[in-house]
Image 1 (cartoon, rainbow, N blue to C red):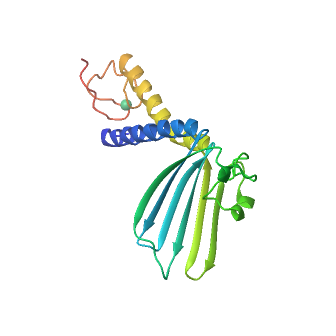
Image 2: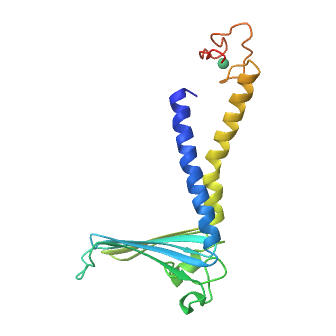
Image 3: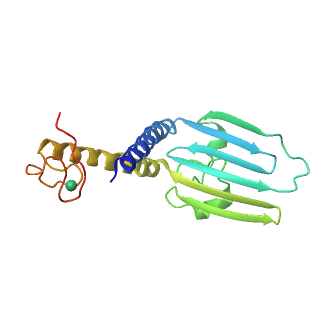
Amino acid sequence: MSTVKRRLFNVLAAVSLVLCMATAAMWVRSEWYGDRMDCNFAGTCRLSIETVPGGISSLLDVLWDDPNPPPRSIGLNSTRWGSPVYTRPGSIMGRRQIGTVQPWILPWVHHGFAAWHKQWSSTHAQYAIALPLWFVVLVTLVLPLLATRAAIRRHRNARRGRCARCGYDLRATPERCPECGSAVKPAA
Ligand SMILES: [Zn+2]
């Protein structure tokens, strides 16, 4: 991997690690609180994202030709679990009913995963997706783990006098790796 590519990879891995930690914190928080964000874009497109115990779901509502479009807005709110709205049976995560994912989505839900689309009319469509938070934590952990493994390998190779890129023995050719051609940084 070239230096530029490796730096880009490390930046992506760092962003992924931040997302992973934020998701882990949200996962713990989701057991007590439901967080919800509602956005209205130009009155035709509404996006809701919310957490449920152990999961996150989002609903995109596209409604063309709305006679009374709501103004553009972003709303955030949190609900402490235990309010009557959230204690109905038939939960997406097997525990609680949630607001964004409507009851007609429930047949598409399996172990907290759901992907769903419905065309209500030629001017009204809804798209929904739901994921368990453990899955998001796992997916965002992949890049940080790969970056850590690569860094450990580079460090170990450099310490043993081997090429950081391919691991070839550099004792005979300290300037340039004869195997992969990468220039070797002078030892500090
Ligand atoms: Zn090499």
